[in-house]
Image (cartoon, rainbow, N blue to C red; front, side, top):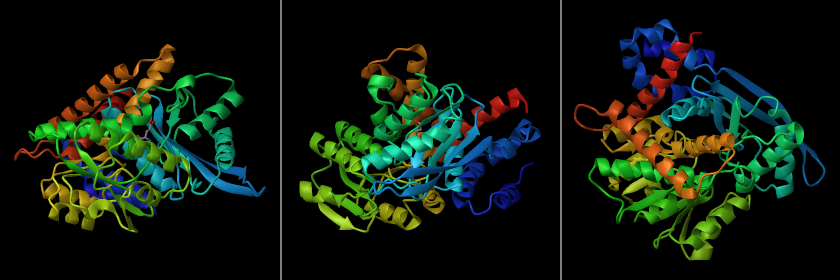
Length: 445
Ligand code: GLU
C-alpha cells in the first residue's frame, strides 16, 4: 500500500527546493492514491516512483551577444519527463522565473495532459531563464540561435518535439526552427507552432484559448447553462488570453479584464473587437510585458499592481502563470458570486485556492484539462507534418473541439462524486494517469 505522506516526504527529500514540483505531484497523488492502491499492479511496478522521476534532464549554458556587444550568459533546460505514450512533447518557456524545479512541475503536468488528449505524445518541458522583457528582436534572434545550437542535440521529430509556452511564440519558434534547419539540414516536424508556410498548422495559435472555451462550454452544459450574457475575467494578455477572449466573445460572453505584471485592465465594454485583439498581439510582440497602454488606447480603466480577481464576474479564467490565483483571490471571487473557475494557465491556482473552490462546490476546471487544446493541435501539426499535407482551419477546429469534449467526458467519468459534483481535477488526474501507468506496466521496466 502506498502511503501519501511517507511517499511525499521521500519525494521532497529527493527533490529539495523544488516547491512547484512538490505542489504539482502532491495535487495529483492526493487524488489518485486510492485508485492506485485498489490496483496493486501499479505498486508492484513501482509506477508512482517512476512517474514522478523524469526520464532525463538536460541543462546547458547559452551564451549570446546583446546589442551593445556584451556577452550574456543564461541557462537552458530540457526535461524529458516521460515517453510511455509517444515522443516527448511540450513547450519551451523563456521567463526570468524559469528553474529546473519549475520545469519539472510543468513536465509532469504535461505528461498527464498529453495523455488526456488521446494523441500519442509523451511529456516534456524546457526553456531558459532568459527574460525577453526589453530585448530587441535581434537579441531574441541571437538568443534563440544559441539556445537551439545546443538543444538540437537532444530533440528530433520522433524523439522530442518542443513548442512554445510563455515568452516563446511564433517569432521565437521561427528563429529556433531556422537554426535547427541550418545545423541539421532537415525539413521535419521537430517543433510545433511553426509558421504556416513551413509546416505550421492552422488554428495552432488560437488552439489553447479556443480549447479552453470549448471545455468551459461543456462545463456550462453539465449545469444546463450557456455562455450567453456571462461576464468573464481573464488574466494575462499573451497567446492564451488572446485565443480565449476571441472565442468567449464569439460564444456570447463579455470579457471585462486582461492583465500583465503591471496590473489589470477593466474594460466595461468588453475586450470584444478585432481591433482590441490585434492590439493584444501587438503588445505581446513589443517585448514590454505591460498592459497599461491598452487602457490609454481604448479608454478602459487600468488598476495598477493588482490582479483581476477582485472584479465581480460569472466566470474566471486565469490565463497567465502558475499560482496566479491565491486562496484570498478565490474567496473574493466566491464572495462576488463567481459560478465557474476555469484554470487555463498551468497550475494557475495555488493548492489552497483549488481546494477551497472544490469545497465550495464551484465547478473548477484544472489547467491540465482546460488548456490541453494547445498541445492537442500541436499533435495535429505533427500528424500533418508526418503526412506532408495540411488540413484547413475547419478540419483542425472540428478535431480540436472533439478532443476537448472527450477530455471533459473523461473528467466526468472519473471525477463525479456521489453528490453529483464533478471534481474535475480528480477526474483529469485519474484519467491522465491511468493511460500512462498502464502503458508503463505493459512495456515493463
Ligand atoms: N506550452 C503548451 C502547454 O503547456 C503547449 C505545448 C506544445 O504544444 O507542445 O501545453
